[in-house]
Amino acid sequence: MNRRQLIRTALATGLVAATRTGAAASAAVKFRDDPFTLGIASGEPTSDRIVLWTRLAPEPLAPLGGLSAPFIPVDWVLATDERCANVVRSGTAYATPDWAYSVHIELVRLDPGRTYWYRFTAGGVQSPIGRTRMAPAAGAAVDRLRFAVASCQQYEHGYYGAYRHMLDDDLDFIVHVGDYIYEESWGVAPFVRRHPQREVYTLDDYRAQYALYKQDPDLRAAHAAHPWFVTWDDHEVENDYATDHSVNGDDPVWFHERRAAAYRAYYEHQPLPRRAVPFGASLRLHTGVRFGDLANLILLDTRQYRSVRLCPRPPGSSKILSDCRAGESPADSMLGARQENWLDYQLATSRARWNLLAQSVVMSYIDEESGPQRRYWTDSWNGYSAARQRLLDTLTRNEATNPVILSGDIHSFLVGGIRARPDDRTTNLLASEFVTSSISSQGLPESHIAALRQANPDLAFGTSAHRGYLRLALTPKRLEADLVAMERTDTRDTPRRTLASFVVEDGVAGPLRA
Image (cartoon, rainbow, N blue to C red; front, side):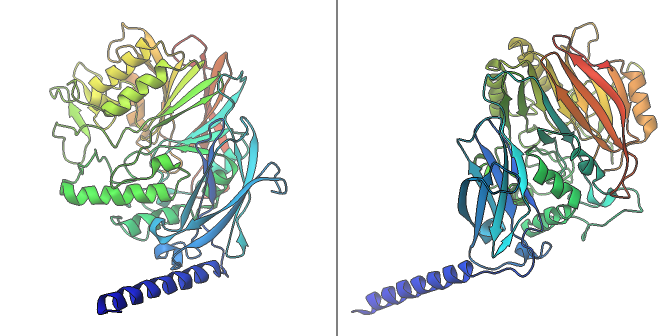
């Protein structure tokens, strides 16, 4: 054996020995502390597939959850009973440090419309039992669908009592339309609880931020009780960012890497399918699910592909005046060309009674000036008027029945109608929009929302004084929407009340006060 062969053999032998040693150590992992501190979750249910999620983290705020093994076996079961005794599927996944010891189990060929229960086991410790529900079969007659819409849960601003109340609402699923975490500390003190650092930048930073937010027991309970659909807004990366352009003017190369870190951490902490595995700073998030013949739920990504705002803005503001024509060019986009084409196909092939578009920012035309001059928030669809018109033209061209827009972002409840040409009140109403308030994030001054209502007659309701969520019930004949408000956010055990209720009748555009 010559020298080269000797070195090659020694390296191979050492690699095999190291691999065997690592495998034995991983298989022998036994946890003294609970590794399921971040909870369990299910997501994106279709009629035959579901994603189950967890992340092992016995020390949740430590790097990699305090783990160092090359891989850790995670057993899972899917059952048809709440005790997980009647197991219909089971298997083993392997949590690795590359993905922060998260696992995503994507199961297929399940029964439409069925309720399942699931559980994980790792290192001799069992997770809580989770509950999930499949969508009805495509084309099946469905007479009822009930779900909640949530947004904006700044950890420092309050507890997540809204999620505690969702457990009593008999929901089929929860839709989260963005700002699941906040990358920075902001707001009016005193805070209910605190971020460990002022702002997060690196992959470890973002991982720790998600781990912090998932310490809230009501958030974990809501994930375990219902399947979720998720899309993001800006604070999952940076306030008001657009594509690779930082609102702070950071170097694009540096910011690209920050966005890649944020996207990776987002995937690691959400029940997303393999389709959404991030490649660098790219993650395919938009998706559509059909609930029998009743509803077509379309989740849009309004952040990753949008054009950069071209108009300068006053310092500390995201508003511009009407003398700037940015957003009116056909080249400007909120969704990007590929997502726009995908949306066109989703609407063209939809046969559902209701077409629900869940996305992050307000779509309604809202003029913030009471006089002839226009003033509007440029980070919403108002700043991308040509892109909004293309979307509305797509709804019209495809004759999408009963379009309803579900939005968040502004920490306020808003209800209104969207016209075929949003800024022209002589055109017909085309769609309804329901904007949920925040789960915890501090709101705008109530006087500001009152002024918006006065200047915009198509707004039927608006308030920023309450934190809460939307609760919606669909039948073939109507959509019913309740604006559910929390009494306070400085305590977990807070009462709730319904501020207002609205209905949208089948075939009639625009919301009506119930």
